[in-house]
Image (tube, rainbow, N blue to C red; front, side, top):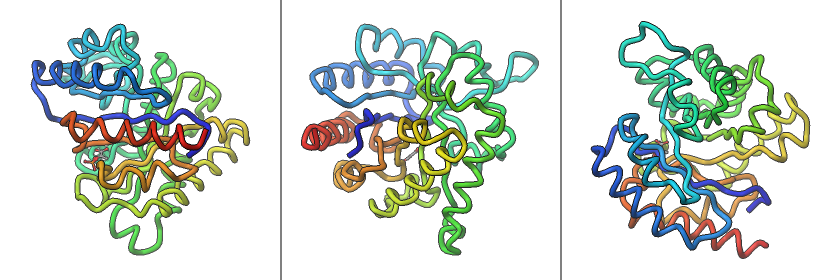
Length: 260
Ligand code: PEP
């Protein structure tokens, strides 16, 4: 495990009513309060952000949105960055479900990244290859292209100063129960860090937090969190119940404490 502070973030996707979100947030706040050395963030659906924010207030648990649009205006159904400023800490962009089910391309994701920085919001930029790309041996090339495109024209220092994060999430591992092999995820994440260093220098690369995401659960969390390049996890399915989410935070904290 690295010296960077790991972050376990729960992406609740399109799950939970507002009362259910509030209930789970309250459980998480209480359960993680005594745990040191790991940051925890929750990313509920938009309509629950405000209620969950109230629940998190006074705790160290961070709040994230799952998506954002570029600006205010005649964009029915969208949410603008200014609406999130002051409401949440993080905003997930480039999630594979946005890229592949909603047709978001690198250019749009880059624009989202830039607008988030302009609105003092920390992006969690997701990158990851599809199964066929993985099978063709194209993983590094795909994620490198996504990273370069995502950061085009971006001030890397500002990204870091706001607490920006990258999440490596192989598309074939998301919600499938087929997680990436820990050492493989470590290698790809190391490569992403190197690329970030090529853009912004070695110190920036060293400071950057990069999560792994894709079927992380209590049974496999150690395999990822013991890797030196991996700075936490972005968690979908296992973030929806405290019984599955809490052990991820506890194990990450235990592994970190063991390396200190
Ligand atoms: C995700 O949606 O970002 C994710 C990693 O999902 P899961 O943990 O369910 O694979």
